[in-house]
Image (cartoon, rainbow, N blue to C red; front, side, top):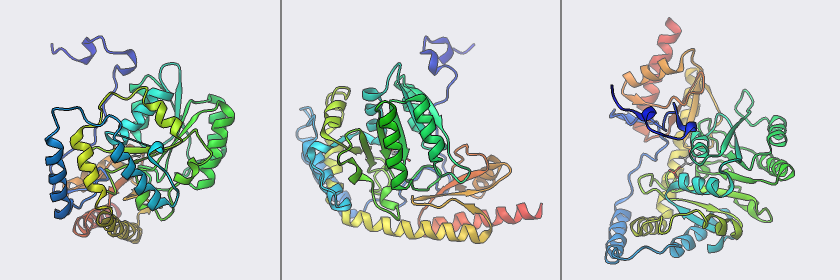
Length: 370
Ligand SMILES: *Cc1c(COP(=O)(O)O)cnc(C)c1O
């Protein structure tokens, strides 16, 4: 008999559960985790090496616990791209926006408290809730994957959650949530408790519309979370951040680990922020490829959810897992997020997207013939 998890005295709510696990398979075309397909440009790689070399001279010391230079640069980036002025005091950074979300749930959730998300949405919100002992409530969506506002307001009034997650553009469906919907959810959440509203904008740089960052003005219970994993093409760096009222930044200090953000990570992120112009040009290319995927998938005969992200949800399939496997058999890895009937493909390079489109064209033909 093998000794396993169930033989350990793990917390009851973790028993029988599975970890987050997008397959990391070695196939020619990997379009399953919404990564940016373009490696960082050489000039930036050089700059990272320089800044990391400098940081290495002081690795005998703990890093800047408050990441002041990095947060200042992130605040400048947010101000420049949103037209809404934020400063050091509004911004907090951590190891990926997943850690930002974890810190928010450690601060505002926890045992005896609950969080709600409108599903299908980013599965990590529920998983991090579980990890922090926060009760999870799965809120409703319409058939077309938009948020059912009346049902959402009802769920908030009924459950009075401590934290409300709104992912826009939403993952895995791709659609953005209208500003008025977010405002209505904020009002509902304030009337019910009041509770914190976390707007997860991991994909906002790819959106046709604007960031909701200006909504933090006069709304101290609203947090916008962002990441360098997608638009900045730096998923391997692990750098996420939030913008909110300075009181929120003060509050998460209560739970963050001291020196959580390594000096190497801070130096690397600072180098990347010197190259935002170049990095955002890749974003423009990816947006064009995303729009091409939407158009071509529709031309092939698939249903496609409107996308403001760097990925596209398409379907429908009688058996989406089987369709996923048949696409994989052709050397292309897409994502089965467990949304019945639907799959998700990340916009890759033009050549990768062509390979994907050829694979699904063949799949469609097979389906039509059978
Ligand atoms: C990818 C993603 C993130 C990013 O997580 P990191 O920890 O910053 O890599 C956050 N939210 C959503 C909705 C995502 O899809």
